[in-house]
Each structure stands twice: as structure tokens, then as C-alpha cells.
Amino acid sequence: MAKRTVLRSSKGTKLYAVRDKAGKFKDIQSYKKAHGADIKRTSKAETAAKKKKKRL
Image 1 (tube, rainbow, N blue to C red):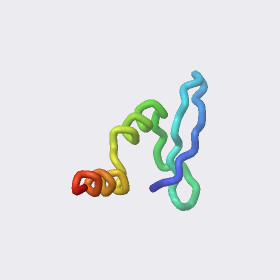
Image 2 (spheres, rainbow, N blue to C red; image 1 turned 120 degrees about the vertical axis):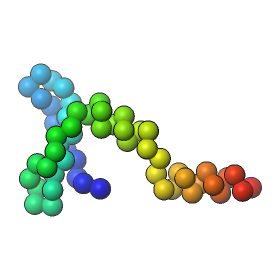
Image 3 (cartoon, helix red, strand yellow; image 1 turned 90 degrees about the horizontal axis):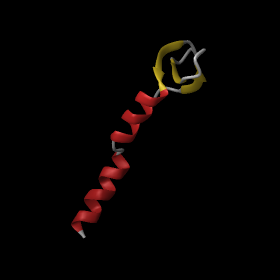
């Protein structure tokens, strides 16, 4: 996963600044949208744990 830095805009909105390997800004997203997308997505570990629990 890309390294993300939390910043604030001039209006005070929280932002995620996504950087590339060189450390330059690749993409800037609003924290609210990016965090919401992260919460909706399930990780591989969560999926595996759910399957394991179902089997028992």
C-alpha cells in the first residue's frame, strides 16, 4: 500500500496525501472519502477469519 500522510487544507479539511516511492505527491484525497472506502473494504485476514469461524 502507498504511504499516506495526513495533512490539512487551507480550509481546515483533513486530507490524505499519497506519495510515490520517491516521496513526491502522487494523489491527494479527502480524508473522509478515503477513510470511508478503507472501512468498507475487508482485509484478507478478516475474510480468512470469517471463513474459519464459519467452518466450526
